[in-house]
Image 1: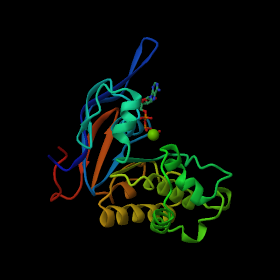
Image 2: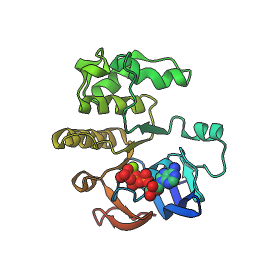
Image 3: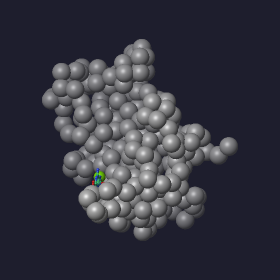
Length: 234
Ligand SMILES: Nc1ncnc2c1ncn2[C@@H]1O[C@H](COP(=O)(O)OP(=O)(O)OP(=O)(O)O)[C@@H](O)[C@H]1O
Ligand SMILES: [Mg+2]
């Protein structure tokens, strides 16, 4: 037994475009432990989204192995993958995908509905408090700022009590100060709840605040950095 939540080894994702093979990801090892914040950096097209989609089991690798919370995710059907992800992985979608006619609270409770679970008002309130939206709980998305919408998207991922939160460019559309407040929120969640966080970012300042930053270029890892006392990648 180890404390890895996600272990990916030799991950490749190739796309066929006519005669051309696009090597979006070309042999990457990434493992993430409980309570650890890992950022994926790299230029546009380097494979960041591809990598986190694979690590989240949202997309299947062309080659490589993936273990999510101790369970092998290789060769599983979509339904089986949903089971593996359930209660482990909370995904924060890039465009927030909030439903405009639902309040903040209702948007946050939506994943429970999909899972056929009953919302627990106390739990919802804790999650809303944790992301700093206490005074916005009954507002509609259009009444929120970009940073607040991002917090709703994060809260919606947290409501299922995941072990790892995965976010594609969570600070992408936000100004510097708002982006920093999202990073501060991630640090709080990692420290207080032992939540692991995997995020992609173009912003090296945000990226460098993670416990580990992994830089991709052309589908390969070109740099690993982080405090030297941290455990190595795998
Ligand atoms: N469905 C697809 N079909 C073909 N090629 C794809 C597909 N999805 C991604 N790619 C290619 O794979 C490479 C990696 O894409 P990816 O979206 O992972 O990059 P990224 O690092 O997330 O970029 P960005 O910073 O712009 O979001 C790119 O060259 C992209 O064109
Ligand atoms: Mg991307």
